[in-house]
Image 1: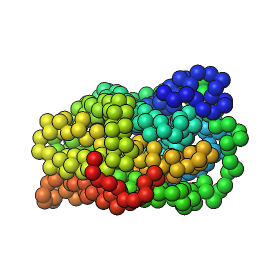
Image 2 (image 1 turned 120 degrees about the vertical axis):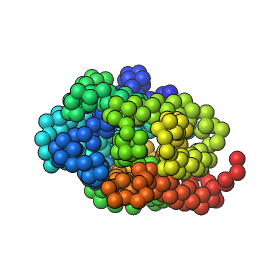
Image 3 (image 1 turned 30 degrees about the vertical axis):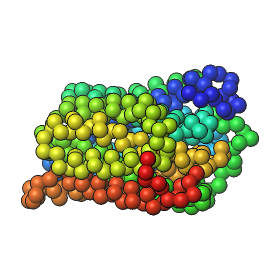
Image 4 (image 1 turned 45 degrees about the horizontal axis):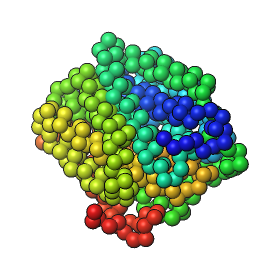
Length: 420
């Protein structure tokens, strides 16, 4: 691990801040993963709807969460550049803990919707967590250390869905209580051990014109070679969010899986992601470098999405999970390329813009993918094709690959060389 670079961080070992950042990502992802297996059952409970209609409401809840992330991620990132990372991280964790506790008591779909709106605002913490990691890392190591953040997501998806499936077997509300406890425990840990990573001399003034999705995007896209990668990232993430948007509904409709098996499958996916991001990416990046890692990762994702779309038996999904997880090398490699183009005082802004793109993807993807699922699984559907959302995602991933191949990127003077 790279040594700590901020002056405040030198007051204690770098290990504790890094552990806190990883735990923040792990626990937040666990909070999301905890509720994924029970959302179909909980929505049907509060709405009295069938699975196809519950999927539509699931798309609305996911989109509301993402709208808030889209709107507030640049604001949170810019606040971190102005006031430091520590206060932003701690306030967000406190809000998350309270919000999950409220959702655990929700008796209507509207209270669930309100809870997801607040959670979306608090989840803008991801941009600050990534900026903190950028503060700790020399430029040449940022892609690998962003891989650790992605590994944290994978670890969260190991334990979150697995625990959510177990707790959901007792009560669909129990996972929300567990998520509240995790957020509260992490807040306490951060309050005790987290130093500030951004020195005062590296901070910049808060500019409202840049602290919004459009203003931040306009400013960051001026960095050399970044505009194309932002477009690639958007298309990639809209496609990739098919997994959390549709997985529980897809596996129930296609293979008859219950909440426990859904949770177990997501946990296996999380293990695979963690192995890729914490270990395999450190072998891939020195071999292929960042640009070619993105290229071949996108191509692998296209193949896997098509395979999910036409899978006819559950065992095929178990085979595909570790293969498709390897495609997760794309995001940290692209983040590493873009991070090199931004200065120390722009890391929060850059990560805020990337978080907004991620949130925009989470707005578009659930609405698109759940609609595709609805039309191909409803009573009158022909053909009956629960994997239709994955085929749609494959088309979007092909678009992302095509744009990347034709673009220019930081550190390259010409379009991507596709030969290894």
